[in-house]
Image (tube, rainbow, N blue to C red; front, side, top):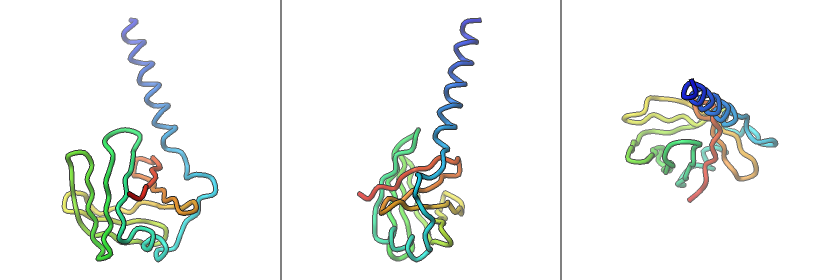
Length: 122
């Protein structure tokens, strides 16, 4: 019975952490135009530290191609912006668009899971 209680508490804690990670964008952050988002990403490489799992290295070429490394996984493909979203399609990762907001020069992306991650220029 004690084992069941401990497992239940661990699941409850994991759920609480997941809910805390799916918070809203930081206070004061704003949506941006596709042009401003493109300018903020083009020609730059970013690191991303998600709440769980390996860090990402994400490079955005001026040519509209991106390269991403997550642990031992890597992919490449096209990227674009529309509204205040970053859209990408890789050879392995299917097409998706994620909402992006900025706070000053800081770039925040909302993952499909709801987690907000910060893209940090390398």
